[in-house]
Length: 259
Image (tube, one colour):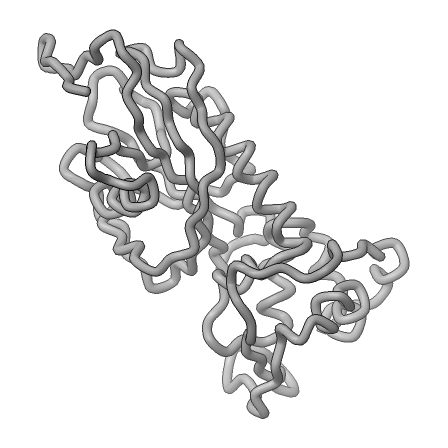
């Protein structure tokens, strides 16, 4: 569906067209745990969105899959090469008034990725691209219906952490159990940091019984005081799940200091 220009802005014709928007999550390890779970937001160089933040998104090309369009959105809006990243469809958002410029249906996607080696470079139509703590994003600061998209993506990610392998998208190839615990604490419950390694294993017994975690026979070389932590690797399909949702035993297990 074509667009026509009107006073320097793109105005959509009457029929609906399709866009994609991407909720890209990361965990920033050097921040307070309540702020560590973060999302990529951009500010666009468009008079219609002055002062508003949005999720990176693009209109879908006629010969393009939704998946390809989502990865293109990350590339063109923030210069991120998302080839090979974990990415899944979140849902379709199509309220008639979601875009004041015309009828646009958005197929939202959610992605999780480590960000310690990523550099955000705003695209040609983007003023700023930044990581923002998800729990600190005011709904009114977001354009379109992106507050709804973010809320649904948060709920989807928190749910999937309890029965799938998505947490391992946010870890290096070799990691310690305290690093794994920090991922779950940032996204699910900061109180998990109060669990020592032994009690963390008890609280997440289903995860450890799944065989997804394999000791590599090495210890971390830096970053902690005292005995270096053992290193683990993930062994399994990143898109897989285990049989049962993780049981929560927080009342019983939150009694020992973290190690």
